[in-house]
Amino acid sequence: MTSNTDDLDVRVVGGGVIGLTSAIALAEDGHRVRVLSRDTAAGTTSAVAGGLCWPYRIQPYERAVAWSVRSFQVLTDLARRPEETGARMVTGTMTATTGGGGGAAADAGDGVEDGLAAWYAAVPGLRRASAEELPEGCASGWRARTPLVDMPAHLRYLERRLTAAGGVVERVEVASLEEAGASADVVVNCSGLGARELVPDPGVHPVQGQLVVVENPGIEEWYVSAASGATDTTYLLPQPYGLVVGGTARENSWSTEPDPAVAEAIVARAARRFPELARAWVLAHKVGLRPARPAVRLTVERLSGGVPCVHNYGHGGGGVTVAWGCADEVLRMVREVQEGRESAHR
Image (tube, rainbow, N blue to C red; front, side, top):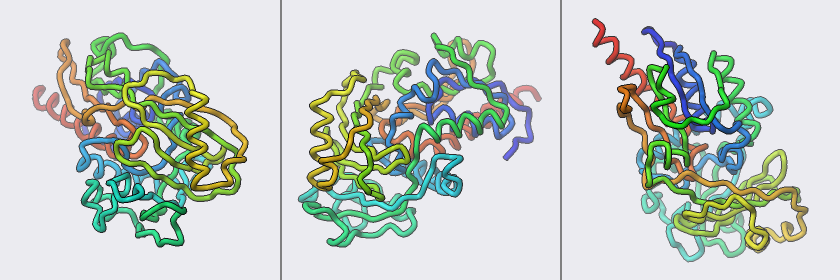
């Protein structure tokens, strides 16, 4: 959709999945967009993400579910071209924790207990898993066909799409949001964990995630068992480059170095559910720092120099899942800024 009003000069700070999708929404609307990022897309936390489209460790749930539903729609469409976009539709199981417990898929018939009822209602074909479809030791779960994204490939697609829309990516470290807005009409802050210092916002903190990539022994479906506040989780995500086995969710841990003992425990947990993994060849170890916050910040404020700044950060473990929904809100907010400028000039 192209705006009928004069376009704006926009600086998007951050080149991960949140920054790139926001930039694409704005560039495809006709704005002049430059993404400012210290790291290449491949060097961002987004590149380490498992890539499953499902709300995880993100608040507020009501808004996050709405954003997730929008992203589900976009990624489902992109999954028609998996080699180009990195998105595929894959069937899998989201389990409840043994003995109930309100995990990622709580043991509630309508999904109300874990705040995701609207998500369950929106996913086509989502249903209760039968006992035969659950690994031994799992009490209950959901079966669904959802987007699973090969993030390195997807980030390359997003950069190509942004370039095709006239956007530009610059490798530069931004010292302040005011600096980013010095020659812009609007700043969009998608700096993730960097917002802790850049805003500054002390509520932003890392949730460390470690995973292991192994040679896939023939597992074709995804599997997740992750209680909402658990430090250790179990998930398997079949990607073209190998089977992603996870994982951890460690609050306020800043280390990006893989811990061999943690890696061994990750594989051991998964092998208890899927014994063939005990002999799988390890291809890689990865660690990412999820940019967490008590709730996503998606608001507009004026910087000290007067330039409007749309904040879009604090997505925790749900960045891939909510990116396109949040990008729509960023576009709406920038349009409101634009309309305000035009009204002032009349």
